[in-house]
Length: 122
Image (cartoon, rainbow, N blue to C red; front, side, top):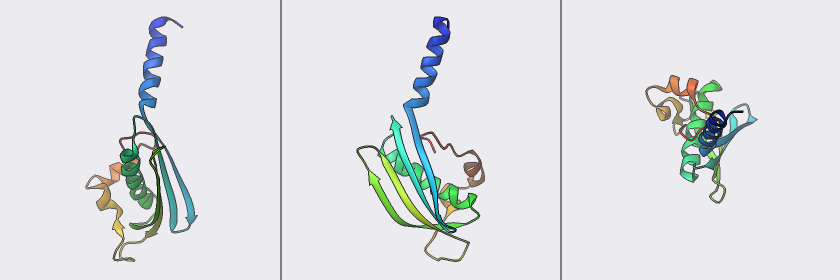
């Protein structure tokens, strides 16, 4: 491989790992999920927490629900990680549930379609 091409590969790899996350969603029941976001590289705990919140809203909609309540959470700040256990609801089924579309904002359909499951930008 020529030196220019090798440099381009190294720079691209560095950029991809500079700010990344590992995200998992585990179904616990038909209406309950566990979302875990672990930050890597330049991502920090605040990034992990913010992205986990966005991922919960995205997963709520993707799974055919409208709102959610976070029923449990766990954090690790040494190796930045945020974990939420979440109960999902249809519209109007729980008056205290957060509306997933409102959380994602007016362009929620684009947020759901284009959610970056690896990056720190959410």
